[in-house]
Amino acid sequence: MAFEDFETKESVVVVYTGEGKGKTSASLGLLVRALGNRWRVAYVQFIKYWGVGEHTFIRDILPVYKDDLLFFKGGKGFYDAGDLSASEITPAQHKAAALETYNIALEAATSGDYNLVICDEINNAVHDGLLSEKKLEQLITSKHPKTSLCLTGRNFPQSLLKHADIATDMHKIKHHFDDKFLANKGIDF
Image (cartoon, rainbow, N blue to C red; front, side):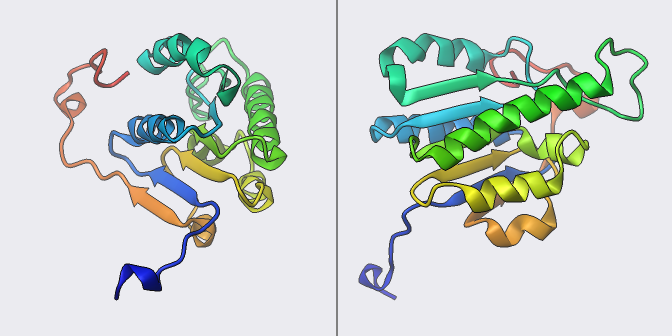
C-alpha cells in the first residue's frame, strides 16, 4: 500500500500503559515533539506532587513557551486503599485532588485551546478508584475534535481501548528494583 492511500486524522488518542518503565518518559517525548511543531500543549499530571525531574524541566521551559504550555501538577501521591496506615492524606482528600486535576484536564481537552493534552498517571487514578472509568471515557469522547489526547499510567481500562488510536503497553523485561535497588534520580524520576 502506498502512502497516498493513507489519510491524516485531525487528532488522536494515545495511551501509554503497562507495568514497565517509560510511560511518563514517552509522554514527555510527545510534549517535546509537539512544542517543537509549535503546538499548544497542556501537561496535566495526576499523582506526582513531590519533586521529580520533569517538574524542574517544565518549570524551566515555561518562560520560553509562555501561553503555549500549561502545566498543572495535581494529586496527593500514590494511593493504596488497602493500606492507608502510613498516610496522613485521607481517601476524600485524594479523591478531591484527583477530581480537581481531572477538571483542569477536561477544560483543556474540550476548550479547543490546545493541540495536545497529556494526562500523566490518569490511568492510575482511575484504577485506584479516585476517578471513575466513566469520567475517563467522558474525557476521551468529549475532547475537542482538533485536540489530541495522551493518557498514561498502569491499568488503562480494556473497555476503553476502542477509543484509542495508538496504545502502547510498556512491558517490563527487567528492572533493578526487583533486585532491591531504589529508583535512580535522572533515570526513574
